[in-house]
Length: 393
Image 1 (tube, one colour):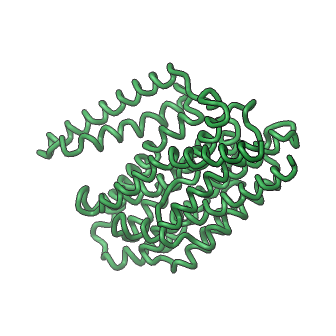
Image 2 (cartoon, rainbow, N blue to C red):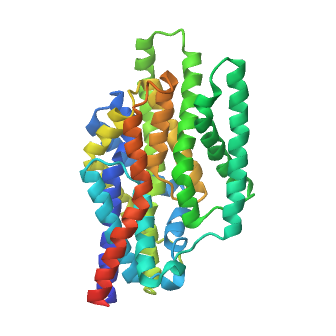
Image 3 (cartoon, rainbow, N blue to C red):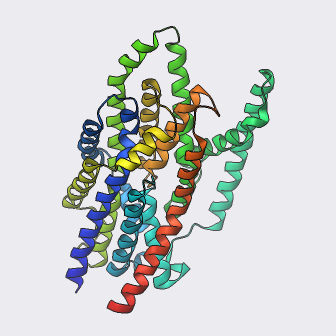
């Protein structure tokens, strides 16, 4: 029975990476497709190749977070992992079918949470201690207030309405403060707490960096012909898209690695939580195959429904999104590539106007999907585990 569960679990983990690539194909190539730097097929082919490279260029810290940082190790059974993956795959496939750009990483986290709670209650989940939460809130609010004050002073000096940018400046302060706390070692933000916090932080980081990079590019090339700028930036945008695909593979491909390794560890097949090489290779192949087939509805929403992207903006969005992914991957935080690149596309679009250039109605739909993913995946996985336990255990 255990052998069958393990084999089925490995298959489902690879299937999860496949639908991950199917949904998240848009992350790497949305801007490349939108600016016609590459045809959709060539863009998907490029993304699938560079997805393979990602996990080999970074550590497997995210796999360990997925496998050890969400559910207490003593409760992490092969049956729980199986139910979590079934729930996550169902949710991501459902989202892909309807063209909703959700986070596959967060679906998996939600799957573990839902199955874990049904199995053993709230105590099964590794929640952060109250002191860490309070300290982070204090630091984050302080950072938001400081940046808001700086924005307000700058607006007053330029005779602009500072109230118009209050919400954006406050979120900017939070987005800059949290990574700074992690980089300096001031506060340890890990596990499910880090995942929830970065639902807000990762898109804001992408938005800020893409906006600033886009403004710099506009200033440097303001006297150049728009036609020449577009033609000259397209090759660089392809390179930026390749970096984005590497970041996607490095972060998201580790989801299946963490689940397979956790299952092997729970079953006693391996004695230490170290990701085997064959697990890395098979996970990379699965996500690359999913990307190769492409989630075309999601690609259309990301490429065309948020804002009209020009080549220099596509370059800004891709480099910014990949930079956020690289930073978070190095800290072992399974952030959403969907969130990072969506925020970057928004930031790039804002260089042509804060309110007019970005289609905020589409943005609101995408953001709603971000916050719904973890609870929805948790509910689905909880139901799956309840049925599975009733029939099989």
